[in-house]
Every structure is written in structure tokens, then in C-alpha cells.
Amino acid sequence: MRPGDPSLSAEALAAEEHARVSERVQGIVDERRARDRVDTGRIHPYFGQLRAQLEKQMDAPPLFDMPSFPKQLLYSYAEKARQFGASGSPGAMPGPRKPPKPGELLAKRARDEPGYNRLRGLSQAGEELQDFAHGVSTLKLTVTLELLQGPDGLLREVKLISRSGNRAYDDYVLQAVPPALGKSAPPPPDAMGVHTDGIRSVWAVEGRVVYVRKVSEMKKGSDNIYLAALTAAGLLAGNFDETTGEVYIIDVRNPHFECRSRLLRVY
Image 1 (cartoon, rainbow, N blue to C red):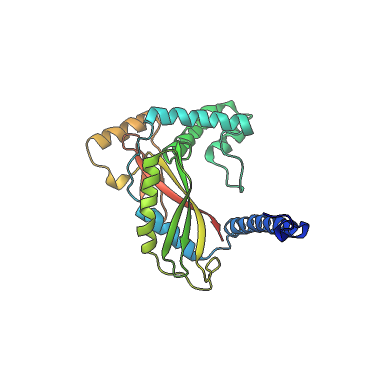
Image 2 (cartoon, rainbow, N blue to C red):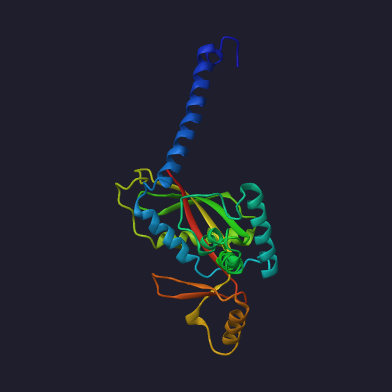
């Protein structure tokens, strides 16, 4: 730098500052638009296919040294208590209105009829057990990734935005991405989010331990004894998958890990 250097003039410094501010503002606008595309559902089905391929590639992960069943149960209880203290409700903050659960209907009716209290308690306990078994309230691992692809869908780069705190899980997810995207069909060139210079998207991959099992996988002997014990204790619960026709029941003896991917932003 020398006295009289034109780069030090007021006009040059003002132009430099204007360029920095403009770039920062444009970045904020791009981030907002990328989130809005996902939040409002204005994304091409191609990204749904990517999600399906990612989850299929991560179909049989290990347990990643996750806490034992008693510790998961304790965590679930503590999390429910924390949510209740924050919002007055043992669940998450309210989102779109959903049909009331059986326990909620019974709670409403039981306000003036104490005879319903025991039935209401059993119903709500079953609902909480279902949430726990499906990993809704258990300890989770979440890793956030940025995927950079060519306009033909070929993967160029995977960037790790945030870690889960479990290195083995992070490595597992990172290793699953290339083969998953390699199996997906190329996107239409006119799809929203597909540009001539490529595709940029951000994903969260959430992993959690679940305690459910298909009835079709259960065998005679110890499984029958287990089912009988649950029935006797009034804890036998499960659900029916209308798509596959499978019946699932809670099985705390056989925990397994489940990975679910969620699209956060499309640029």
C-alpha cells in the first residue's frame, strides 16, 4: 500500500463494503428460498426418490453403542418431563392439528366420570409405549449433510455440516451416500432445484433405536411366551401397516437401529 493508492480511496472502500453486504444479503435470501421450497412442498418428486434411496442404502445399520433399554426409557421420561415443563404438554410443540388419540378422547370424557380414569390411564400408557417403541421419544443421532450433484444427478461432493456426536454413525452415513445416489435415476432438467451448474441440497439423517418387530418374523416358543406375558400385563400393543399389510408389535428384547432422512433445503 502506498499513499495515493486508488484502492484506499473512499469510493473504492465503499464499493468493496457494498459488495460484501450484497453477497451476505444474497446468501440469506438464498437460504430462505431453499428452506421455503421444502417447507411449502414445492420440490420435484426426484428428491423423494433420493430420500428413498438413502434410506434403502441404510436399511440394516448396527446399534452404534446406543444406550441400553433402561437408559433409553429413563431418557424418554426425562424428555417428556422437559417438554411438559416447557409447553405444558408431554409431547412436542403443537403442529398441524391431528385427530385426537383414544387416550385424549377418554381424558376428555373422564373429566366428570371418575370411572373412566383407569381405562384412560391404560390407554395413555399404551400410547406412550408406542411412541417409545417407535423411537419417537428415545435418544437420537442426527447428522446434517450437504449434497452437491451434477445436473445429471451424479454425486460430486458430500459436505458434513453438523455431526451427531457418534463418529461411527457419521462415518456410516457418509459411506452410504455415494452408492445410494448412484442407484437413482437422473432428474428432469427442468425440475425445480436442478440447474445447469448442478444440484445443491441439505439433508438431515436421523438414527434411533426402535423396539418393534413384525409378527411374521416371530416364532413359536420364546416368542409365544413373550406375547403371553405382555398380554397378561396389559402391555401388548402394536400397529398395522396399511401399505404392506404387516402387523408390528413392541418387542423390547430385539432393539434395532433405524435411519430416516429428511430434506431440509433445495437451492
